[in-house]
Image (cartoon, rainbow, N blue to C red; front, side, top):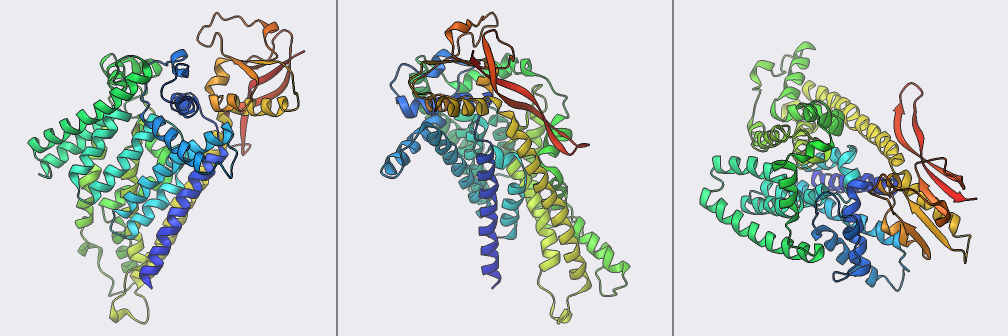
Length: 521
């Protein structure tokens, strides 16, 4: 009976994580500039193949080259699924875009589920999935085409191997993530590599052999594919590493204080669940229950002094928590900081938080001693009250806050909302010559090649996209997507709100008019 209940709970936790991730995908179907390369590359590879000449990245290459490995995987999977379902679905570009993001979501969830399964079917794995589901960043970004998300998919499998004590496979996974998707994962590889060497789980010779062999295979694969598609020899993540680390150019995008991750990013990402992390190491829940039982006068209650602050579980958690903290500390030396840079840390922080919640679970629902039957001990009763209080305050409050964050984020894509409106507008105007100019702000906030392809017969122009001196000639265009409200010869037909913020006093999300859809008079 207990095993059946545990299996049901695990399945419900998996459904919860899928549900929140899928809901965020539906709520925010558009993409911002950080995801643009992977999204546009997926479009080009799906529609044009791997041997075309008219790729988007030739015209808009970005600051540094990025790898096509992730988009290639999604494009191939999209081809397989659309071909298999072509008899039932007449695929349009917006459906293909949704399918690509959904497939990425499923690949990421596969990693989360496998990591949860590596906890040997304990309640820890179930709580791990629940904690991840109620937070905002991990479910939200699971379907967003960032290099960090692609890397996270590989890292989750590496962590699952690590938890299963397959250290070599875990190391291979981290090398793959570093060489192909995110060069900064090398910091994580460094921290865990030292830990494995110190614990003699790897030898220096074995680590070198594994790293060189795996790295060479990855380099061959990524350099061959990416050089072909970029039309020059390139190792994308090597260029990124040189640009951001050696040249220090990442600071051009903003500098945050050294403590940003600890005082802002991690608390914002984990919210109240962060308080469960220290309880995975220190036996605070057991101490609280023991002291409370003593206060109410139960003589048989275990005195708090007899409960050690640390147990075997504490040291198991520290084994992966210390390298994770070291990774965060090393990354703090880099001036430019973003929450997504810490994606590799959150799975292990959540695993630690799940261990802390499991302590409360064991106090509340652990097997009672025979002498305590038919009544539960006072410690068990207090433990259940404490478990309920922690569950409600930490998990439900975090879920509520995450839903608020998601509805705020929905307004971060005014360009995407604007082009969807334009699609509806133009669907009623047949046989008319339409040329649309898309400005920088619109292109950065949701206008993708999938969205443009969904408007057949419409000519899109981004001329002047990278030139501030561009002067729009109104007579050339029938419509504009612009952050400028006043353009001679045009009238506003729709406004897309953006720049959202939460007004706590008024208890509502406040936005500003950001992107205007203009039509020639």
